[in-house]
Image 1 (tube, rainbow, N blue to C red):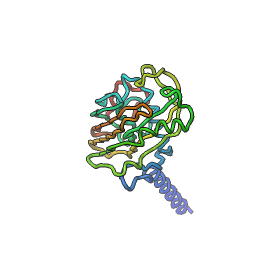
Image 2: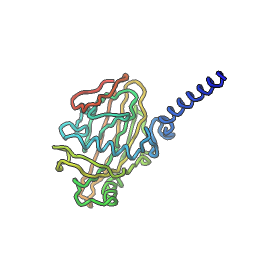
Image 3: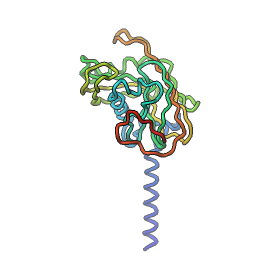
Image 4: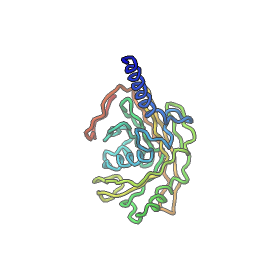
Length: 249
């Protein structure tokens, strides 16, 4: 009887271990190993919902410390909490950043993305209008490229994600110049969601462009970003809002 109990306990422990492992690795992308496919749900949250969390993270930062405006990586650790580390693109143009990312973090970033919200676009109220507004610039994206440690990712078109609607709060002196306060937004873009990188020094490079669109009044847009990620050791991400620190680890 004791042996049966021991066997059952061993089987239970094995099942828990396998489920824990599958929760993280079952969504590996066969085409691009180490990249979550668009239908994945990392940490039991759907990929599109993660893009809303990224947008809320980016839009909550004032322009002076916003990671998208920062060209060196000084503010890459701003308000980073939870199992996924967010990397910013730019508001147009190039950046060469160094970012210390704690070991064991997934990494999410847009190759190129558009966001439409009711403060920036007061006439865009209906869901279908927000979808059209967010998608329009991305229908003609050119020259997308993502290179991880010297290896280009393939078939980037498959990583296009349109988010659900989400609540958004613009701070004082935000980078879009809109009045501070709450609004509702929606985004569309091409997103890369990496599983944790192995210990060591890494580079992440991504670029893309979209042409001028006179119909909605947008100009041509180019993003070109390189991140260098130094060798890392395990560390805890601070729960406080960190605007000046740079997390090592």
